[in-house]
Length: 56
Image (cartoon, rainbow, N blue to C red; front, side, top):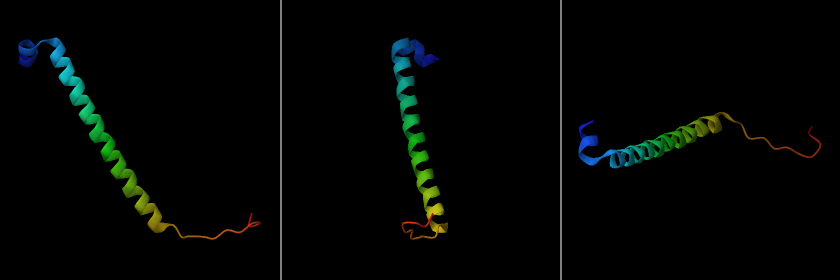
């Protein structure tokens, strides 16, 4: 609140937007790492198969 009085509402809002963008980027990075980890676990359990025409 003290910062709002010193810098004004516009600068405070800009800082909030910057912080929000930084948190969004960090969240996206966590999501990407989670998906990569999940893919590794899935790929570890999957057995490769070869399919030929007419197998269905």
